[in-house]
Length: 253
Image 1: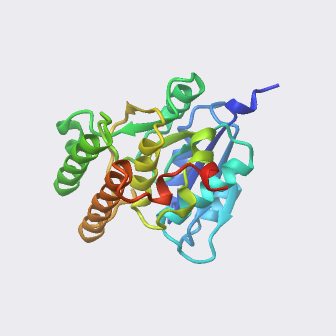
Image 2: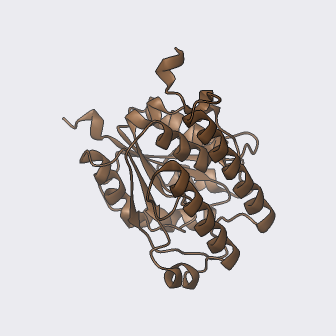
Image 3: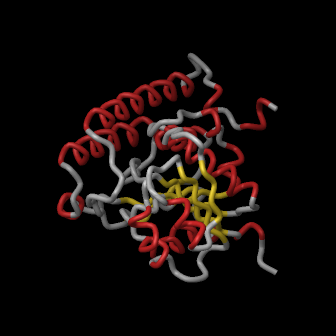
């Protein structure tokens, strides 16, 4: 019988992914996951219908709730399904699905609690893969600041391709985070505050018309919100203000 601690669930936060979903699924290595859950955030296309036809477990939001809210539904569903490892893979084919067993493997092997797929192996590769220059600049600037103040040494914090151990998702207060894009940074800052082991592996960057991406205005808002959350972390760390978001769940039970 398979150890429940190693049960791997892939979660897909989806929005208008009908044109890329089939290709994404086709490239996931056979046998690397026990189940795939797709959460459709009120897409305007037939993403949910296609996902059901392809045999996925599908959850649909009746109205668009945001990227962070989509992840909350993903992680809640995965934990309720008994996941030991949860891999978030976007169904827009921006990230290489063949890396799923590598992300989950570092957790199953007891090496990491959280694993990120780093798109910035080199500047040339990231930009030639289609990453806009302003995104590259903001990515490098924010990653430098986050490493400096969080005490980590990661190559990229802003990837949407990640894997979590069950233990990390049970301890981090992600349910209380933003429903918007900054959720991605909040959960990593929380993980650093709780001293979870965060690792990373390289993944080629791919940008094309069907791949999801936020515009300059939304990127700027995301960047400012990231800096605000780092500021909260510093105040919490030095004991000036204790923020609930950085405390493990069991402390407040």
